[in-house]
Every structure is written in structure tokens, then in C-alpha cells.
Length: 292
Image: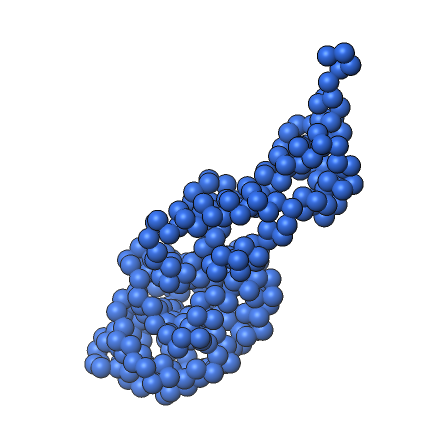
């Protein structure tokens, strides 16, 4: 562990920063912390100690690598069972405003904390590789925040976003341990639906709603099976279909709109990138010479 990053316990239960703060605590004989709540989101990562953690009356005996996700206004406190043992943990605080800003970019940032709030399930215990990954990410963030490297603030923000995505993936994988056969059926159904609805709305939101699956799961299953992203696949299928539309004589002004492009310029660029010809060049080359 990076000892220079550790600090003794601070009883402050409010944030000095308006965004996020992270602490690496190491305490000996810290034998009482009062039940409390706060206005920010907390990720609590346990490393060492003889501790049970109480969250809203639910008690969780902690092991190395366990972590807790604690939303705002949720009461919690540690219960110490013995003295003489170092109480060691990493704690991340994210302000409500900053969390809501992340979620305004993508609601998927709220995935784990939304699950926690809806199910009153605050405690997580994963495999060794997973909690080593979490620990490393938090220590990297702590080092970046307290370092003096160029662009450290910007990099800290990138790291906090990346960390939340990691947590959400861990939560998602925990909740969606489904047989491979189900994922294969979902993949085949996705392909079939896309191929038969190229002229309709194929947004990820729409597909998630239609197949009753999360956007992350759909994207993950499709990429694993096809080798390219869902967006790339839809684009390729639409461009291929637009070639047939050009051969059928559909005007360019109708064609781009019909296959989901917002304007002709974006259609032109995508078509030329895919086929090496502009739509007009393709049409001209496809016309057979007279008397052929």
C-alpha cells in the first residue's frame, strides 16, 4: 500500500469540495463512530479490521475487499469487535450535484446506486481480482487528487467517471449471470429485428425497451458475438440497404432520411467511408452502358 496516502480518521461528515473527495484511513483503537448520514454519495472499501458495518439497521460483517454503496441520507456506522487491530479502509465521497451532473450526461452512471436504493442492498462481496481492481482504481484516484502533476484535476474527473463505470459493470454482471444460451438467443433476435426494421427507430433505448434488457447488456452481448458494436452493425446494414435504394432509383433526398441519417452530409460521409465512393459515383458506376 502507498503509506504516504493514508491519514487518520477525520470526524468531518461534510464535503469541503463541491465535487468528490477520497480518503485512505488507517486507525488503531478507533472504538466508536456514531450513527450518521450525509448529503453525498459514499463508496466505502474495506481493507482491514474486526468490524461489522450497520446500514439502516442491517448489519454486514466485513471481510477484506468488501465494499458498501451508501446513498445520501442513509444512516450507517461501523461496529468494532476488538481493539489493537488496525482499522483500514478507503472512502470516496461524491457530492449530490456532481453525481446528478454525471447522470445528466448518461443515466447509466446511476445504475449501481439506483439498484442500492431500490433494493436496500448496500453490501457487496466479489472475487479477488475484482476487489484488487477497485482498490487500485481508488488509490490511483487518491494519488492523482493529492499530486501536483499537470492537468491533475482533469485527470481526476476522468478517473471518477471511469471508476463509476467499473462499479456499474460489476453490479450489472452480478445481477445478470445468465446462461450463454440466453445471450445467444438475444443476439440472434437482435440481428433479426434490426434486419427487418432498418427504416425504423433502432436507438439503444428503443431496443432495450423492446427486448426488456438493459442497454449495457444488449451492447455487451452484441459486441461479444458480432465483434463490432451495435451502432457499427446498424450503420453497415443501413448503408448496404441504401445501395439497393440507389439502384432502385430512390432520390438521395429521400434515401438518407429513410435510413436514419439526420442529413445528407452525414449520409454522404458514411457512405463514402464504407464503400470508397460517393452515392452519386456509385449510381453512375452502377448504370450499365447503352447496348450492353
